[in-house]
Image 1 (spheres, helix red, strand yellow):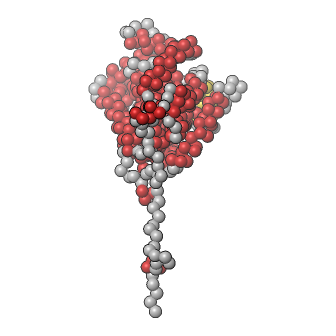
Image 2: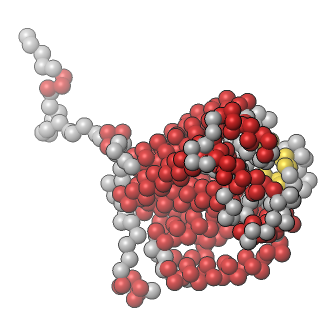
Image 3: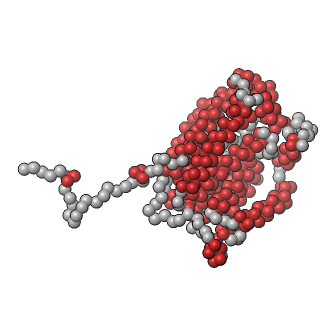
Length: 405
């Protein structure tokens, strides 16, 4: 007697059901998010070489942090959009709580380690953790989650909640003080609001009010922050009176950038130039000056070009995304990374005040490197993951929407 193969036996009631398609079977492997990943990896490897120019002892630690960042990005790729929306609010509450914790004067120094008068780091024994870096991810997810199911941001008063989501962490970070990181939140929020369909005239009104508020709050800046702004302005005017004082770091950075020429110098010669010019924070905030010293104008253009590739990949991911939350996450992550690059390289070449901002993927630092790789993980999550079967149209508004409002 010949027995039928189980695979050939049809269930009662007709044809066998079609195999269930999993998320992995529908992955969009051709996503432009890979451009972001490739650019980020190239920048991190360039950072390892630049850090090794003057601080070879930090290279093993930074390489380990790269592995941690890659693992963090891989973990972020897995959750669904719905889960990311759900965790965005607890993450924002946690981040705000940690930022408040940093500012409590009674917290012992061995828990919150002050550096140069700033309270930005929490001691985790094995490493230091900077909550403001996690705040970048939390703000992007929370604003995207808030705007996803709302339309009132088409009116002026509807802009207040998403802007508050950005401004509360921004204000706490500014009190640490950390002017550089604080500068990232508003451009990111505004870019996400534009992508969500907010009216440009309303955003211009908010921007004007923000400038007036910033001018009114300028007395709240710390003395060294006001000094850095004065030094930058004097530098632009050709005034050298601050060169040996508050303008020393900026002047050293520009001198080394000029010394790099077109093609730069070898590692040993670049290390000598950096040593004898005494550039502060050359492995961290001023790492772009190290890149140009070692690889010249070519190295600087390659750095900017890689960020350009990253921005292009992020915008293409947003353009191809049909689901609103994911589109906003892609816009927010891309804007934040690009803004941070502009602020860092701008202060290094002397067109922006020194703010203590790291260059994403390139500067030495644990929390900053892991945080930017988390943003790359979000871009990969959006690009690789296909939309749900029941997805809501992204933000599309016409004249009839304006009439209804």
